Length: 144
Image 1 (cartoon, rainbow, N blue to C red):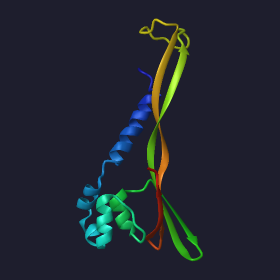
Image 2 (cartoon, rainbow, N blue to C red):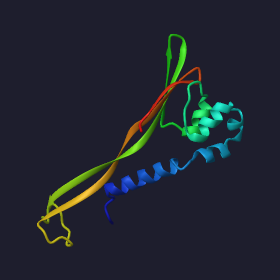
Image 3 (tube, rainbow, N blue to C red):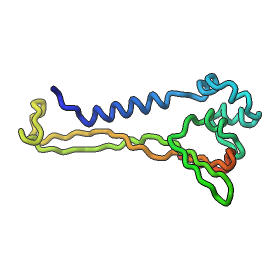
């Protein structure tokens, strides 16, 4: 039986992430016509361009940017504050130099006593945050 390798876990994670990220603005609007029809004119224009504007509803942000990766709720001076966090994956290059010894690395394709490999992994990071007060956008930040 072959050992389950770490890169298989990365492939599974990446597949699940890609499957979750395949929704587009158009598909979210098509799947939620009642949400889109309830938006104001400026919200509809912003949503169609994937933009966020101050005072925008949470439904409009969902249609423009999709489902957030995480939500934080808090109460500040009697006001309901909610932050939506969006995550992306950043590629990280890992270079390995291994001594080609039977006990450490046993592979017949390499003639050199040293083996050099480059692996690419992916690290999640926060790429955008939207803050709502009473379910309306008060501020947002997005990495470009």
